[in-house]
Image 1 (cartoon, one colour):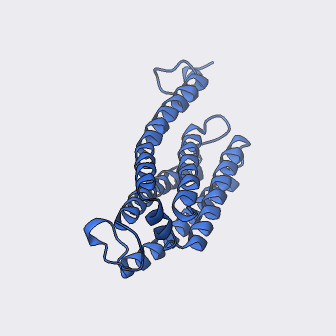
Image 2: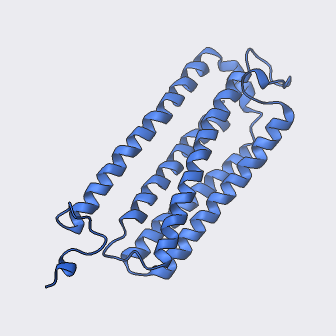
Length: 215
């Protein structure tokens, strides 16, 4: 057996075999995801503290959010997680063309999410429902309603940034998949992109009820 066969191109020299490389990459990704959870955890703590201090204001302010748009975005993100998982499964079965199509579908769904979020943000900017000193809306009763919208924009804005990063990563693995870089032997980058995308989806599943359905 040749040296090239023993050590395929995708296998880094410091790993003994593809399985060791795959497991190491997944462990590294999980550690990264833990730091992401800690990042959002701080924002969730801030939400809990201010929610306890201003319960009536939070209740009144959440009515300014569009539940229909938030609900559609929830369905869109959950569906995108399904297409991402199916793309990985297709690669595991060496079905490259369906995998590319499913990755493209994931990208399109992510785009739909951002377009809906754009309309939400535009409406709030038009009304003056903005963070901090930029808040000038007068339709929400209660003390310091700008705090709710500060938390809203901070949490959904950070989440939206993660969506953009995820789209970039998914686009990259989609192009490489189309070029034949991945197969049932090696699909680790696609699986790692999937783990990241599932985290983005999971965070939104927590944001939606806390911000849109609080009551």
